[in-house]
Length: 235
Image (cartoon, rainbow, N blue to C red; front, side, top):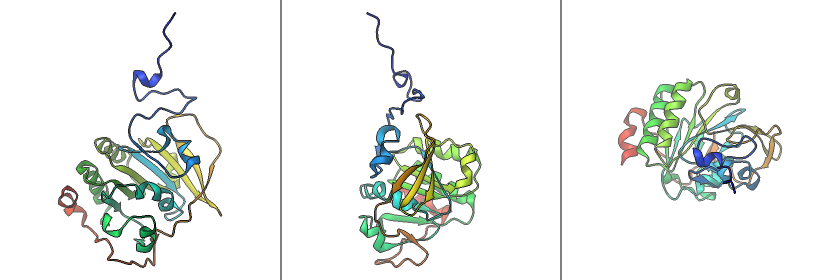
């Protein structure tokens, strides 16, 4: 009797059948949203890889979408690079993410922000890294993706919706649009079949986590200068 045909991923982890979700062999984090997890290879957010979240504008709900995964960071620091607004202390407390766990970095230039993100990934001391960035060369994204692959950091780049038309090495790319009930999620890229319809995703009733007028119950995370970051993340 002939042997069954091997699964493509048994030959190499970068191979998968176009009609099926890839069997992601690396670690994943549960999204906290069953409908979304069912659409992702491995059933969750990939860890140790670049994830693109493409948004209409910062604050459409990306932090609420990510909050279950961030809340499961296991006490390791979470780095916010170029966040559009201040962290909201009470909202973060609600999901079990204390301010003392956050490291906020506002760089003077895009180049400094990219450099800082790469150092965080290479240091491997943070459980998650969220980077808000706009125009960025694909070569810089490749550097970050490679740095992420050598770590076990949950790495998300929040970028403009228009970047969906650009090339990206990200393992997973999701486009987010705000709706009256939460988000409409378009799966721009995944290791699996094309999904043509947006995924409606009611967001959990989490308070605002980033706010222009955030009230902090404790001290705000201290901003870190980009070029002095290496000692901070290596500690």
